[in-house]
Structure formats: structure tokens, C-alpha cells
Image 1 (cartoon, rainbow, N blue to C red):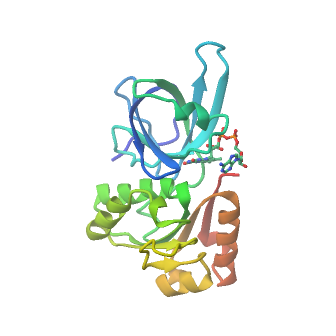
Image 2: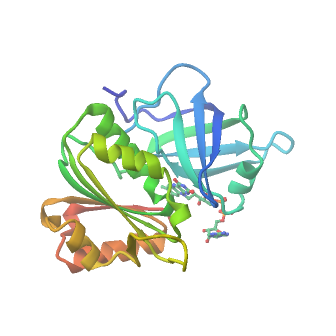
Image 3: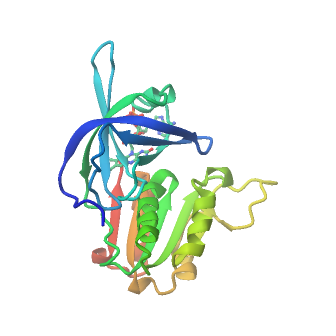
Length: 243
Ligand SMILES: Cc1cc2nc3c(=O)[nH]c(=O)nc-3n(C[C@H](O)[C@H](O)[C@H](O)COP(=O)(O)OP(=O)(O)OC[C@H]3O[C@@H](n4cnc5c(N)ncnc54)[C@H](O)[C@@H]3O)c2cc1C
């Protein structure tokens, strides 16, 4: 079992790996400076603080944890938009220290409580869902999961192979939809924005599922509207708002 969540910690973590995952997204893995594990439920986030060694200026941003609670590393999917925080990550190197504070958030998935779920993710909004999927796999839990994942281009799919592997390990059906398919990109899967029809087609039993939505603010709002338009009650929708 993972450590019990709720204890908020603040401590240094060291970058252990950086993966250039897609043209715009880097995966950062961090290890704690000691052997204690951060207790969290999948879906939660931490504040990562960068402290400028010359000016001592501090800047913090929220990032959803993509690793499972049992993992030795904390993993994040970071959209490298070259903003105030992410521009520091552009030049970050393995071995550098950042400070983590957390975990925070009500966007929490308890596999024992929500047996049938629909995950709707856009871009790096896959991060909390990946934590949830990895956790279900670690627990060998029999949750029935449909993941509808929206990206602009086929080369923006994060952890494509791992998602395919998970489909053979847990009760997961993944549907990727590409919103800006290009001539000659070889994409033969679902195309266009996620609509009420997409949900009805891939999760026809949506009324029995708890829905988790995560992505950019406009995406989250649009997906919330899609769900309510087909009669999914507010009490069955959980959305992580990043805006
Ligand atoms: C709970 C929570 C969880 C989050 N989890 C994640 C996560 O897992 N992964 C992740 O990548 N982010 C996540 N975010 C967003 C993250 O906290 C930062 O807002 C983001 O990394 C940008 O920070 P920044 O300092 O680099 O940009 P800032 O300097 O703060 O500027 C960001 C703003 O600039 C605009 N902008 C500028 N350039 C671009 C561009 N090229 N593309 C898009 N917008 C642009 C956007 O409007 C954006 O709001 C999360 C936010 C919250 C609240």
C-alpha cells in the first residue's frame, strides 16, 4: 500500500532523468534527497519551486504527478511553453535540485471506490490519468477504464507504448483522437475534437461511470459541457482545472 496521503511536505528533490518525449513535452523524473516517499493519491499535484542561486528569486508552479504512489521517483509531463517557470526547465540538468511542496488537490482517484471510470485527457492532462493507470496496474485492480485522449498531432501522444502495454495488463480501452490530422501523417485512428458522439461510441455505458477530466482550461470546460449534455450529473464528474 502507498503511504497515507494528507501530510504536506516541503523538501528538495533532485532531477534524475529528463526525457524529450514529444516536440513540446518533456518528462522530468525526480528523486527525493532522502528515502522517504511522498504520500499521495493518483490525481494530486505538487508545487515545484525553482530557486535562482544568484538572485535567490523563487518561482513556483503546480504540476500533476504522473508517477504512481508506489514509485521511487516523482514523474511529471511538462509542456515546455518557455514561460517564466518552464524556461528554467529548458536548461535544467540531471542532478539539479528543485523544491517540492505537496501533495495538494481534490482530483483524487481511489480505485476501490470508483470501479468503472471514464478518463478524458487533453495534452499533458494525461499526467494525472497516467498516475491512476499505473496505480491500477500496480494494485492488479480490476477497474474498468475507458481513456479518451486528445492530442493535436500523432507525434504528441505521450507514453504511447506504455499506454498500449497497459491495455494488455489492465482492463483499459484507450482511444486517441487527433484534432489536427495532416495529409500523409499516417494517422488512421479517431480524428477531431471529443464530442458527445465520441463518448457515446467508446463508453456507451457512460451513465455507470465516474468521469475524470484533465487538460488545459478551455478543454476542461468543453469536456464538462460534453458530459453534462449527455446527462452525466455533476456528482459523477471530477475535473482538474489548470487555468
Ligand atoms: C493543478 C495544476 C496542475 C498542473 N499540472 C501541469 C502538468 O502536469 N503539466 C504542465 O505542463 N502544466 C501543468 N500545470 C500548469 C503549470 O502550473 C504552469 O502554469 C505552466 O507550466 C506554465 O508556467 P510558466 O511559468 O512556464 O508560464 P507563465 O510565465 O506563467 O505563463 C503561462 C501563461 O502564458 C501563456 N503562454 C505563453 N506561451 C504559451 C505557449 N507557448 N503555449 C501556451 N500558453 C502560453 C499561457 O496563457 C499561460 O497561462 C498545472 C497547473 C495547475 C493549476
